[in-house]
Image (cartoon, rainbow, N blue to C red):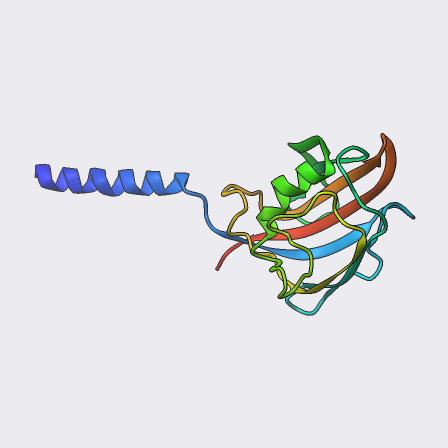
Amino acid sequence: MSQLILCIFILLFSKAYMLLIPEAYDARLVSFISLSEGGVWDVSKVRIAGRERKLNGSISILEDLDDEQFSFYAEAYTDREGSGRYKKLPYTMPMTPICKGFNMYLPYFADSAKFGVNIDFPVDHPPCPLPKGTYYLKDILLNTSKWPSLMPRGYMKGVAYFFKNGENAGVVQVTTHVVDRD
């Protein structure tokens, strides 16, 4: 009898423990747009194509971006149902010098964008200053393996605000759809 009770306890405990482990998820690109004219880059040639929502095109950085002049901050929003009513999440990235920020956050996308394979910009170790130039994007799919283990499901929108010498230099918005992995 005590063995039966022990087995039931272990079963219940393991089920409760499994509830604490987050489920795996996938993210698909919905949109990638610049919300401002001009600025220090041109993303007008970036497209999301096909059923798999692959990112393709080119991004032009119009001048060298260094930590002394350039900085950015980012905000995150979620819309669980896809109704278009986004709610701001408490996760924000504070104002950060551009090179420091890219070195902190681009490695999360290194598995999605492989240098020399589908991008010609070193995502895993970006140089500083970020060099002026045009960089291609080819068939980039989001790989969430290095993303946070807990992620709200539904539509996620990230908005990055860029500044040059404290003045607005542009805004980029990326929207993804996060779903449980099958």
